[in-house]
Amino acid sequence: MGKKKLRKNKYIPNLAEFYFKPDYNWSIEEAKMLFDNNENENENFDKIFYRDCVVGIQELKAESIDLIIADPPFGLDFTGKESLYNRNSDYVVEGYQEIKIGDYQSFTSRWIQEIPRILKPHGSAYIFSGWTNLLPILQSIEDSGLILRNHLIWQYNFAVFTKRKFATSHYHILYVVKDEKKVFFNRIKHYETDTWTISRKYKPNQRKNGTKLPDELVRKCVNYSSKPGDLVLDPFTGNATTQIAAKSEYRHYIGFELNKQLKETIDTNLASVNVGENYIPYQERLSSIEELAKQYPNAYNIYKKRLK
Ligand SMILES: C[S@@+](CC[C@H](N)C(=O)[O-])C[C@H]1O[C@@H](n2cnc3c(N)ncnc32)[C@H](O)[C@@H]1O
Image (cartoon, rainbow, N blue to C red; front, side):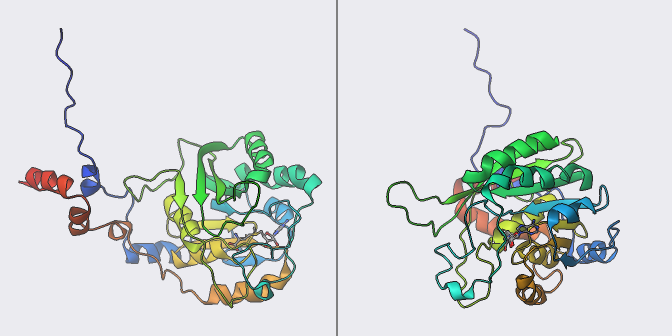
């Protein structure tokens, strides 16, 4: 009987974390310089346009956007006040723009089909969707020629109570790209799965559109899929979560929003963050060797031995 083939290096759980380095790791000075040197072909950056994104996107220059983060309306009979986590609906800004149920497929296909034209060859998009409108979104992605790289699940808390079925506590995020060979992706963590558990922040006594995404969730998309100085588009601005994530991480933004009543909230939100205030070089965002040693003592012992 032949000998069992041994692995060259025995697999040690968590050891790889001790050696991991992000693919790109700009210093604060480099990130600021890339932001200031702004080489965008789009002259309309760092602005929000209060108009229909379907028309707005058509007017954007070809290959002018690095990243798109899109959280479209649900296509339900929704006014923005229903979510349980917005406990006091007096703080919800009126005028949430819904899509009529029968129009959802044609509406979705109209904005998604423009994405390959406006994205740069290395560009990508994160499209958010509840399960009720997933089918038209997937169909439109397929028709557009975009490549679906991951079907991410965002798992959240504050699920709306249901009596006779399971309470929904997840969202779909379709991570799509224009060209798999050219796509920009900065692996900033050694091991990242396609299920992201991130809490919804309950922000009492603050004016908002009733469907705010968590900042942490949107910043994650920005950090994996763009470089400092890049241009990030959000066609459905809402509270400007994407624009705030972009600004605070040294990226530029552009946004569309139909609801003009949100302008004051959006202006206040954008003024509340400084350019680059959340930016930390990616290597520094990782756990230190000391922290990893506490978390994974067995792996640390091997790491120490191999250093000698
Ligand atoms: C689900 S919310 C986005 C929430 C946002 N991601 C946030 O974190 O605050 C969708 C937004 O799209 C806006 N909207 C709906 N149809 C639109 C259209 N055709 N063009 C631009 N904005 C639209 C709605 O008024 C709403 O503010």
